[in-house]
Length: 103
Image (cartoon, rainbow, N blue to C red; front, top):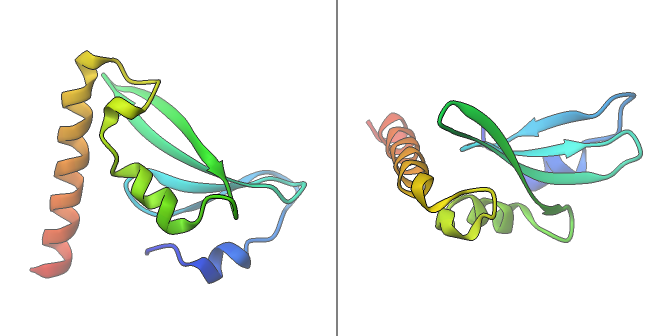
């Protein structure tokens, strides 16, 4: 299910940090002290990596989603050799999501 701004505003702090997920690896990490941080989870060569995008409300849902679709060259955690693999993964995910919703 796609994340909405209402769901983000209604995400209240709990005893432990928890994730509110969107799609393509984007999620909002809600901390016990009330902080809400955008993160992107991705894999390179089978190794899971996480990239911090920014804090909500400084970075809105649409801005965070747009950053997921940016060219991978803008991410400091990615090397040039893994750039094409990352783009291929994001492209295939986008295509499969589109096909599943339109077929």
